[in-house]
Amino acid sequence: MHESLLYRWRGLMTVGGAAVAEPSSFVAVTVTPEPTVTEPPVENLPDPLPPPVPPATNPGVLEIILPSGARLRLEGPVAPALAAAVVGALA
Image 1 (cartoon, rainbow, N blue to C red):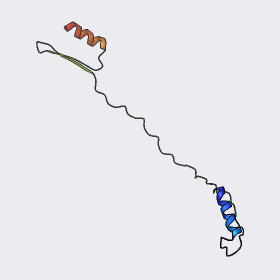
Image 2 (image 1 turned 90 degrees about the horizontal axis):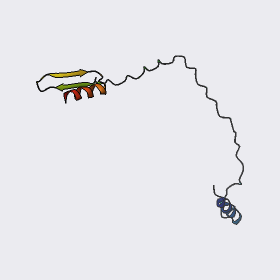
Image 3 (image 1 turned 45 degrees about the vertical axis):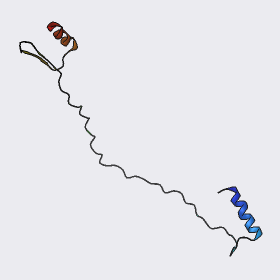
Image 4 (image 1 turned 135 degrees about the vertical axis):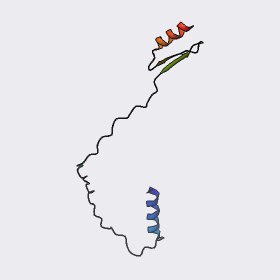
């Protein structure tokens, strides 16, 4: 509420601009404390979720087709040094 409203209302009352059927009075108010909420105890806890499954990965494959048509295939995790040695030997 802005302060100017108080002055406006007071001015209306003194000038007689407000039609009041009966005089102002206070209204009885009872203030009560907020109710306390108690949560019921948790008896059955749900089972914990399983750990996340890592995404499936395809094993590494190094396949070289030789000029004779023969294939050299290395499956699984291939060390970079081994791949470099194989390519270097064929060069």
